[in-house]
Length: 124
Image (cartoon, rainbow, N blue to C red; front, side, top):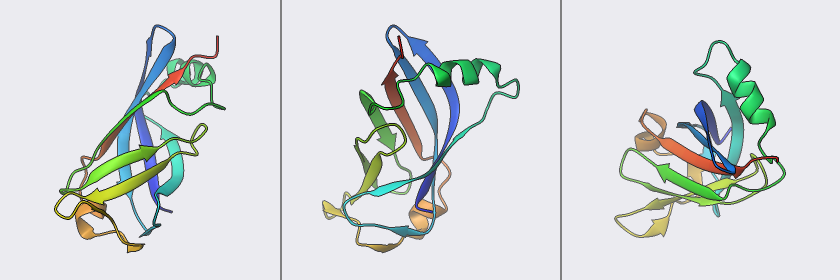
């Protein structure tokens, strides 16, 4: 598994739903951007509000906005794809080069403060 996205909140705003959560990296990186391993919904034990909002997301469309913040000195760039089919390209800011294919560095797998925000159109 390349990376997983643990969703902690879904916030409606106008015609979009903003999705916030934490990224976790494991396994190996693929040149050109790594695809998602899993999108997990958590943070709300009742589940109902998140289920209702999730079912209202236009899952067949890519996100309209995205923001990735990586801990450990790396930059993340989202490559849009439909629904959870998006990829994250990891850049080493010291060199400006993309991370080489292979095992993720410890700075990415051990850090706990990687976050991502996505905005999807509502299924109106």
